[in-house]
Amino acid sequence: MENKFRISQVFRLVLPSIFMMSFMSLYTIVDGAFVSRFVNTDALSAVNIAYPYVNFILGISIMLGSGGCALVMKKLGEGKTHEAKKDFSLIILFTFILSIIIIIISLIFIETILKILQAKESLYNYTKDYLFYMIVFATPTMLKFIVEQFLVAINKSKTALVLSMSGGILNIILDYIFIVTLDFGIKGAAIATGLGYAVPAIIGLSFFIKKSSLLHFKIPSKTPSVILQSCYNGSSEMVSQLSSGIITFLFNFVMLKYIGEDGVAAITIILYIQYLVTSIFLGYSIGVSPRISYFYGSKDIPMLKSLISISIKLVWTLSILCYIIILTSSPILVRFFTEPGTNVFNLTIDGLKIYSLSFLIVGMLIFISGMFTAFSNGKVSAIISFLRALVFESSGIVLFPIIIGISGVWWAVPIARLLGGFVCLYFYKKYKTIYNY
Image 1: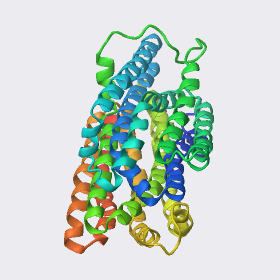
Image 2 (image 1 turned 135 degrees about the horizontal axis):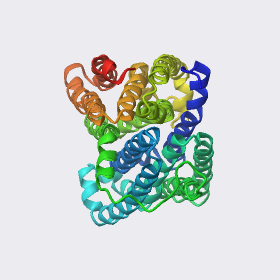
Image 3 (image 1 turned 135 degrees about the vertical axis):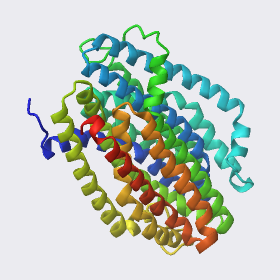
C-alpha cells in the first residue's frame, strides 16, 4: 500500500458520496419546485416553516450516523472487528426504536409544535398537512441517512449512490403523480419525500444482513456508552442541524416582519440552493471521514496527513467553483421556483448575490468539523458548529436588519461564516501536533 494518496484517488473516493448527498438535497428541492409551481408560493413558505422540526429529526439521524461511523471505523482500524459489528447493530436498533417514539410524541403534540413554529393563520393548514406526513415517515427518514453513511464507510459508496438516486427519481415521479395528476397539494410533496426515503432505507438495510459484508447484523452490544459515545462524536452534526432549523425559523420571522410571505418564499428558494451546495461538502466529508477514523485508529500517520492535505486543496477548489456556478446561473436556478419579473423572483436574485459569498467558506467549515468528528473529538466539532450558527448567524439575522435594513439579512450568513472560518483555523492549528495531520 502506498504511504500517500493521489488527488485522483481521493476524488474517486468521495465522488459517489458527493453525488449521493446531492441527490438527497434534490428531495427537498424537487418538492419545493413542484409545490411552488403547481400549488402556490404560500405553500412553499409553509414547507419552510415546517422545516425546523423536520431538520430536528434529520439531525438526530445524522448525529447517530456520523458519530457512530467514527466509533465503528476506529474500532475496525484497531482490529476490534467483532466489537465494531455489535456496536453497529446497536446503533441501528436504537435508531429504529427512537424513531417510533418520536412519531408518537410528535403526532400527539403536533398542534403545539405548529404554535412553536409560528405558523400564521394564512399558512397554518399548509404547514400542518406537510408536517403531519413528514412525521409519519420519520422511521425511514432516520434509517436512510444512517444506512447510507455506513454503506459509504464500508466502501459501498456506489451502492449508497444508486440507492439515493433511486429514491430521488422515485420522489420526482411521485411528486408529479401526487401533486400534478392527483391534486394532493402539499400533502403529496410530503408523501412523495417519505416514500423516496423508505425505498433506499429498506433496501440498504438488506446489505447488512449478508455475513460476507465487512459490517453485518449481530446481537447488539449491551453497552449504553456506545450510543452516548456516538451522540458525543456526532454532536457537532446535531448542533449544525438544530442550528439550521433555528436559522430557518429566524429567517422566516424576520422576513414576515419586514417583507411578508414573499420574503419567506425568497429565503426558502435561497436555502434550497444552499442545500445543494452544502450537500456537496457533506458528501465529501462523509466520503473521507471513515478513512480518517480508520487511519487514526491504525496510527497510519503518512496516509492520514496525505488524505487531509489533499482534502483541504480539493475543498477550496470546489468552493470556488460552486460560487462561480451559482452566481452566473442564479436566474436559471430561481426560475425553477417562480416566474421572472415577480416580486419573489427579484427578491431572490438580489439576495443571492450577497448570500452566495458564504459558499466560498462553508465547505471548509463542514470539512474541518467533520474531521474532528472523525477523530472522535465531538467537543471541538460542536464548538465550531455552535459558534458559527447559533452565535454568529443568529445574532446577524436579528441585528443586521435593524442596523442596515433588509439587506442585512443577506449579509448575516457570509459574515458569520467568515467568523466561523477563523474559529476553524484556530482549532486546526491547535490540534495539528496532537492528531499528527
